[in-house]
Length: 142
Image 1 (cartoon, rainbow, N blue to C red):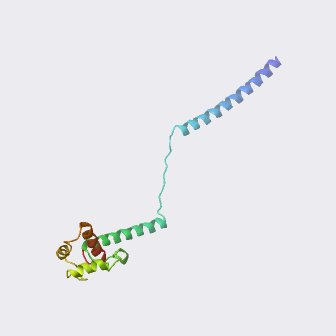
Image 2: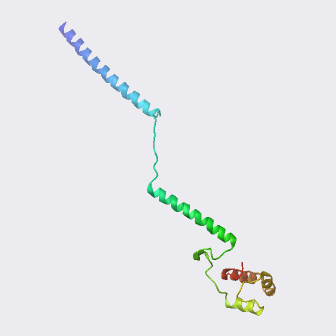
Image 3: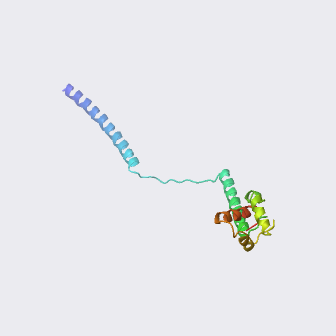
């Protein structure tokens, strides 16, 4: 009988250890299931603007302000307001164009479009376009 009692006691201890192990495993499985089910507890975050972002925002505002001023100056046709980088580089006409205009009495000052058209009657369409674009680059014609 003692053997049966010893076997029964050993069996009870083993069953108790197995139950404890099962309990731990179930708790781990429940935790893992909660993680995998997508339940999310409250998440809060704060966004702080860094000094660099503030600098970039200030530069952006300045660039937008300059763009508005440049558009207003371009719409008004004022060359003095435009920065030097945006003004046409070429201020003189090619010699052939200057000679052709001089033959018709058109000088270095601003060119009247009607007078210019009358002076270019004998030129081809491509030549007329070239002369007008040269005058625009030189600033002699709007």
